[in-house]
Image (cartoon, rainbow, N blue to C red; front, side, top):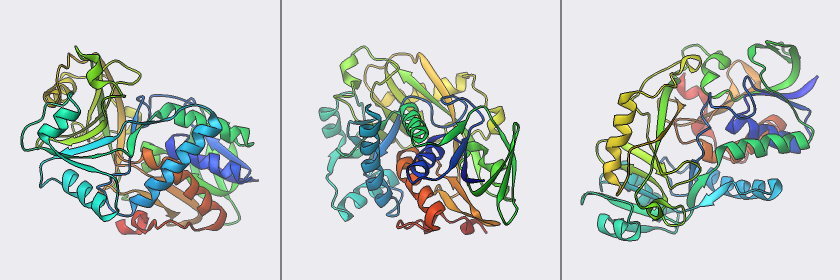
Length: 371
């Protein structure tokens, strides 16, 4: 019998598998696709990491620990995964993105610079901002390479004697009291503990009636510039920008040519993960192209990518024991802001499997808040 099965080898499942394997658990990872694929939520070359938070105080200890663990992972994997460019959160003075970031920085004594639109454009000439926008810049921010992150966690988990079966889809699971039985399209397994970290497929895998998770089709685009130095990662930060019409986010050039731009929840198009439309539409292009008004010298977008956000109604995570199975941990660290924390979430998963508790306050992520 296995000690733990982890369903889903995306950001959080792969990190959980890694930490469980390091603790000596006999652990199996099951993934319905290949090791690296473009069917889920983690692909696309870059994901934001930041210390300047506007979601609430619960996330700050997770952010601090995540930075530590990403740096540890880089050393163990011997490749760069974390790129520190700084981050700037921009919005009107009464916007949540600006107010909450500034208040959090002051409250927690973080290193920050409060800037008006002219100061932002002087320091980062790639921006073209209206006068009513202000920003909070923090050096402690940047981006992660998500594909490399997943590779590092899975390969190091295997090095620590974990097993991963790719292209194996979980069909069902059942708590038999003495153990949990997991049925896939290839085999039946028995395990003492189960971790479900299936991303957009959690709605089906959790098996919780009326769970208010929604899956949103998400599109990003890369917009080249006539002046490549404007958006070079050595000159330009990661950014989150609420211009009053749309709440966007993006990255300096990395991987694909140009500035990467996304709009949170894009067109708010709900999908089932098995039927997510990966074709780029004129509406997709228009939404992202219109947002380039906030930047200088961008050209027509040449590359686009489609992924998914899995959202809770309050945009906070789910990280808890399953309501009908004490030995099943459910993980949906999502709502478009979860990847950065996956290194710390993986450690928490191993704590919950090993000790049934964690030193971190994760009450905010309790499933009972949805009744």
